[in-house]
Amino acid sequence: MIRVKALTKEFKNGKQTLTVLKNINLEIEDGDVFGIIGMSGAGKSTLVRCINLLERPTKGIIEIDGVDITRKSRKELLLLRKNIGMIFQNFNLLMQKNVRKNIAFGLEITRLKDFKVTSIPQKDFNRLSYFDKRKIKKEEINRRVDELLELVDLKEKENYYPAKLSGGQRQRVAIARALATKPSVLLCDEATSALDSMTTDSILRLLKKINEETKVTIILITHEMNVVQKICNKVVVLDKAEIAASGVTDEVFNNNSTEIVKRLLGGAEA
Ligand SMILES: Nc1ncnc2c1ncn2[C@@H]1O[C@H](COP(=O)(O)OP(=O)(O)OP(=O)(O)O)[C@@H](O)[C@H]1O
Image 1 (cartoon, rainbow, N blue to C red):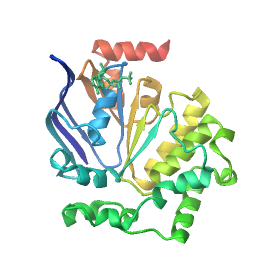
Image 2: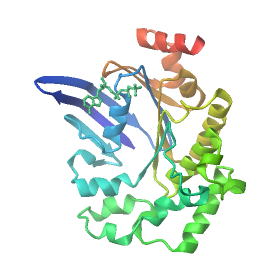
Image 3: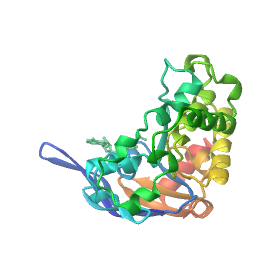
């Protein structure tokens, strides 16, 4: 479970202080497909960067599985971050590597020595994924990549380079790569924003299938209502640094009392 308590994030620019997140409280349960939606500049990416340990909150607590990550050292954060996979709007694939090598990449760079230098308590370490705990043998990497190619339905494209793939296929590769080390959370930052509506639907169906089969928690940031309505069981609506509405997706959008929810719904109908 991910618990965000009274999170505030400020950026300082000279004498000016910009409050980008103000008193954010939310709970993401294991296995949720959790949507974070809001207009541009609402603070979505900053919230995710805090959850992904890339930004330190100014105030507040972020707990992952009961561990307060805001108190961890940089080294410990690097290790904990291995438990979170990420996919992006622009896929971020390695253009010089084929599909198989892109998927294997995260497994190949995982080394046992990474885990000897940390002072992380054993109980936290035990929560990390199986693949993080030791150097991975080549056959094991190949077996895992085969599994992932199957999962994202790209077996016949394993030797293709990203330049020869469609946008949807590239995102499938990115999903497989993000899941390779069996993280317990998958963060999707505008993952379908560059795709047409049919391809978006197929990626959303894939994410839903993965969520059901592997129980990975999915956090999905988007400005698109349709995306949230199609796969998120819960949603938080951010507006100007604050939570404008949150809860079970259907309830939040059926009870469209806040101005921002009406605007987001308007956008979906347009
Ligand atoms: N490192 C930073 N320093 C200063 N201001 C920042 C920084 N990062 C983000 N901001 C500001 O915080 C606000 C929220 O940005 P954020 O990227 O979180 O919004 P967003 O909802 O993800 O927007 P978009 O949908 O356009 O990506 C913006 O006004 C942005 O300029």
